[in-house]
Length: 555
Image 1 (spheres, rainbow, N blue to C red):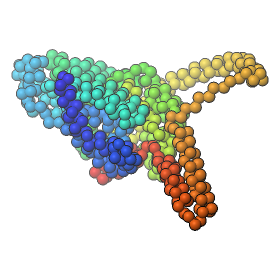
Image 2 (cartoon, one colour):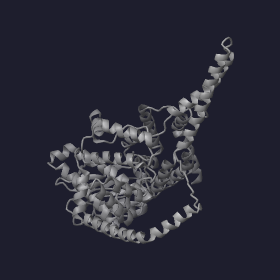
Image 3 (tube, one colour):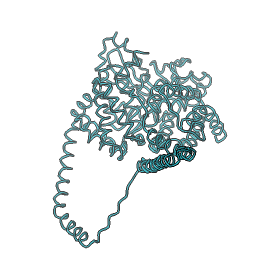
């Protein structure tokens, strides 16, 4: 395993070396010295395409990693997100003799285990592939894990662990936090996805949760023909959920379909605490009568009760358009840094809420908010704790599917209706009343406690016996930059004054004045660069619905 991991590490470094060198040159024009380079949007798109090719070349583990990265704007710029979103979990199938070995190791002879078995897979993915067969007279789908995939994945996970400390040296603290969480979550997720026994348990649990929902169809598992590396299920054919023409041809209401999809995921996350975490169009189909079929439960997750409650609070705050409550909830979940500029983040959230409601957003307003972000936020303020990584992935992918079905779909309206029907508004109101009662009690207690404390403090002031300790935090080095500018300004002022005096007193000899002027140039250049250099997010808005429609029109 170690030898294979070392070899894979060398392959990964070789594959990513052009991007590594380019990134180093962005920080230092000549790698070891020089100023920063300005990177254009076109350059970032080109690099994202190089990254996409590298992930495809490195194989299954890195394809899965790319899919997860495509939902993490806290780690990658928007241009990379846009390119990686096209990454499909679709690779050439393994040869039949290799798959046959896995099947027979789990179930015995293929011809004895099934009435009939089609040797050509109907789909091939990075970790497994699916065949059709006949079992006891019924059509079934048989999911078989790729031979030798466990060793390859474990070697690649070791490579990723070795790479994290190196990558952390070149990124900010916030992105490093998210990257470490992504690494932990990815390792856990991909190992779970290779365990078909776990997938079977999750599938059956979610199927039971929706047993009374006629709009949802989940395949039934075949216990006698399933194991850790083989999963046999009822075969449920359907129309791919993003095949708009076929859905329209069958007179299926796409808005109702999107509403059902969002409500299903709200139930999974908010009520049940266990959810299907890979809702891309390849894993969602629609029957001729409009039911949604769910495939592939390998990538799934659970939600802790605390996070469930905070998600409810978040949706209620969004429905009420209470920006302050939204920010407070994000901070409590650990998703938003407490040090983030609340005014700027509030403006960003207002923009996001308007887009989620399907409203048209004026471009000047978008540009105005982006300018605020670039001028006030020096490090990406959002964090993604481990428990929320898969939840965000689901929310992002489901949003894409729903907008494909209905470009004007109103997520907030659907979520509000669901929360009201389930009684969460009343529960939230009750909690607010209880919290208000506690605050009233604390306020009453303070009315009796504060005056004596204030009196003692005033006595100490009167006796000149009061010491105040002040701790000033300057994470963004604002004071440091201000101090440098003052020093540079003093040097420039002294240099300019010296030049003028020398030239005035020695007009016949310009050499002393010229020397003084030359010595003034370096601090003048440093002062100019201190004002010119700007740190911040360099991004153009790409996730509004208008931009999505423009990209679809171009495609």
